[in-house]
Length: 78
Image (tube, one colour):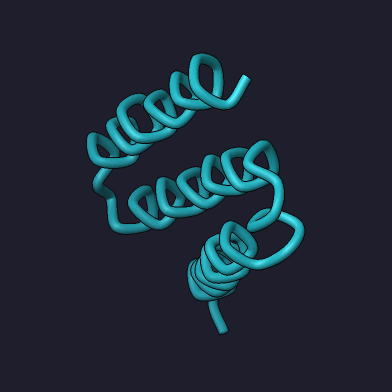
């Protein structure tokens, strides 16, 4: 296996695990953990975009989606 395949599988498994933990305990019961795990999941997805050489999509993923979750976290949950 090449280096890119190893990085891909780490990012893919990380995305699936953190996305599942958003709805399963402890993330599903605590909105704080759910929001933070969703942000981590978005960072893993941005890493997958970088592997696809879609750097613009990776930056937009972080700025738009993770930024929106942080605004939700700041104003609604807190």
